[in-house]
Length: 178
Image (cartoon, one colour):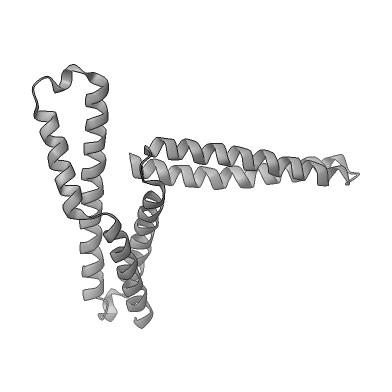
């Protein structure tokens, strides 16, 4: 149980750091401003602009909701961390909180002055470049191998391994922005 309590305290520290990057008061202010924009007369006359603003509003509301829910979950888990009968539930909750915090950390890493879709596009381009460079390096190495089946096997292994890694990261990103 002590191990779980330590892990939960570590998660709380990690949450506090992330929380500072996503100031709730600023988020609430931005949400109110975006909501006010949606109430203006003629807002829906420009579909492109209204779509962008609606998306920003939705993203900010989702982020605020995630932060508040996560704060409550961590607080509740720490409160019951002394109860031996709750050990299995606490282990599960700790894993789930860890996943959400990791996703938030990734979102924080990717957020900034650029649109999140630009960050995803940049990651995709970087992954393609790394894959091409990796395949080129692998091709050079495979030329030294006489067995053509072994050469092709190495290429297929590398490509599959790398594409699975990219798929996992993109799924995480899509979850954050959906």
